[in-house]
Length: 303
RNA sequence: GGAGAGGUGGCUGAGCGGUUAAAAGCAGCAGACUGUAAAUCUGCCGGGCCUAGCGCCCUACGGAGGUUCGAACCCUCCCCUCUCCA
Image (cartoon, rainbow, N blue to C red; front, side, top):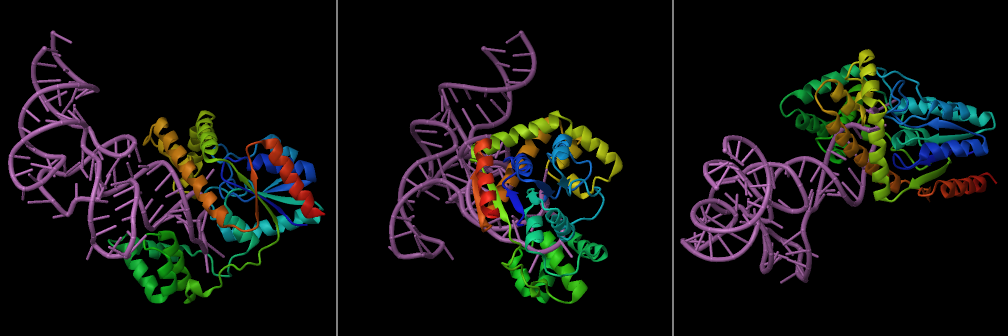
C-alpha cells in the first residue's frame, strides 16, 4: 500500500487534512516535520492537539529532546520501519509535515556517506572563526573537491562544512557519492495550495495566536532544561521567544520578526515543492472541497 | 509665537559637489537544497530601447528658482514633519 504524503506551505491546513483522511480511510499519521519531532516544543510548532492525537495514531512526534542530535538520515532510518509497521497492520501511512528534505531522505534515501563527526566539525569551525575563515575553507574545498566547491557559494557555511567533513573522514569528495536517483518510494503526494494573500494573512494570525497562548512561557520553561544553543531554539518563533526571555527583544518586535521568518519559510517551502514531481496540487481555500478531492485521489490510487 | 532637527526609491536609512539609478537592511520576486534543513545560501529588484554594451534614452533624492562645466549634496524662497521653549 502506497503511503500518502500531505505537503504544502506551513499554515495551509496539512495537519487537519491528514487527520480527516486518516479517520476516513483507516490511516495513521507519520510526522515529517523536523521541529515537531522535539518534545515540549508544542505551541511554536503548531503540534497536533492531544485530542487529535487520541483520535488517530500519530507517529514520530515528541521523540527526542532538544539537546539530542538528530538529522535527516536519522529520520529516514526510523521513519521507514514506522511506515512499514503501519502498512503491516493493513492501515495507511499518512505522512504529514513540512520538512521536505526529511521527506526526500525517507522516500529517496541518502547516499551511504558517513554521518556527523563533532570533533571534525569543531576543527572546521575553528578555522571558520578565524579572519577570512569561510574563504579559506572554501579554497580548501576547491583543492580537494572542485566540483562541490563550484556548486557551493563560500558563505554557505553549513554545506561547506559538511563537504569538508566528508572529505576529512573518508578521503573522498562528497560529490563522488551518487546523488539521490529518481527511484523514490512510490507514494501519493498531495500538496495544498493557497493564494499568497490568504496564506500570509492566516500565517500572521497564527503567529499572533502562538504568542497569545504562551509561546514565550513555553520557551522560558524549555530554556530552564536545555541550553539556548540547542537546535530547536533556532527555529522560527523559538529564536525570537528565547530573545524575549533573555531580555534582548520586546514582544512586539519578536512577533514582527517571527511573522517575517514564517512568511519567508513558507516561500522556501513552495520553491521546493514546485520542483517536486508527481505532486497533486489541491486548492486549500475550502476545507470540504479539499478533503473531498483528496479522498477521491486516495480511492483512485487504491483501486 | 520663539529655538532647533529634518524631508532620499514600497518602508527603514546612508550619502553631503563629479567615479550615484543613489550604500545597507526590510519587504517583493525567482532559485538552490547529498546527514544543522523552521537551517543555510544564491540571483533579480525605477522605466524604456536595442546593434544587448563596464551601451543609449527617460524619470528620480518635498516644491520652485539660483550658483556651478557639473547638485541628492551649496544658496534663496515656499510647503510639510518632528523635538524643545512659550
